[in-house]
Each structure stands twice: as C-alpha cells, then as structure tokens.
Length: 77
Image 1: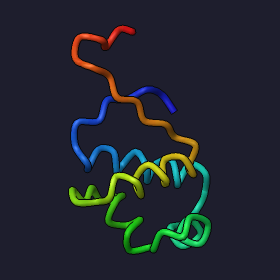
Image 2 (image 1 turned 90 degrees about the vertical axis):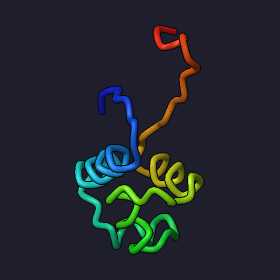
Image 3 (image 1 turned 120 degrees about the horizontal axis):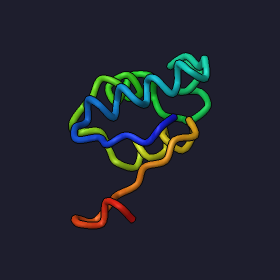
C-alpha cells in the first residue's frame, strides 16, 4: 500500500476496508482475529468519528498498515 495522507476518519476507514479486502478477510474473520466486534469494525470502516484510537491502531497493525504523524513543517523528513 502506498503512502497516503488522511485528513478525516472516512478516508482512513476506507483505507482500512481496502486493506482488509486486499487480504481477502471478511469483517467477521477480522473480528474473530482481533477481538473487536464486527459492528465496531464496520463503524470504523465507515468513518465513525468517535471510534477509539486504540482500536483503529489495532486494526491497522493487524492488517499490516502503519500510521505516521508528521509535525508541522517536517513533511519532507
């Protein structure tokens, strides 16, 4: 997966969904694998703004994704 900039929960949710589908994992299988409910996975994939950061990070890790925060003015580093 290429580097992308996420500016809202919806675009991050779509990327998580895309990563899951690329791995051919169903929401149900991911729920069993991670211990996160299918309803929560669905909500995150649909960009729920109040999703817990820890759960989003866990899904990203389990799908082989990583997130990086860049300080203002440090984008090129």
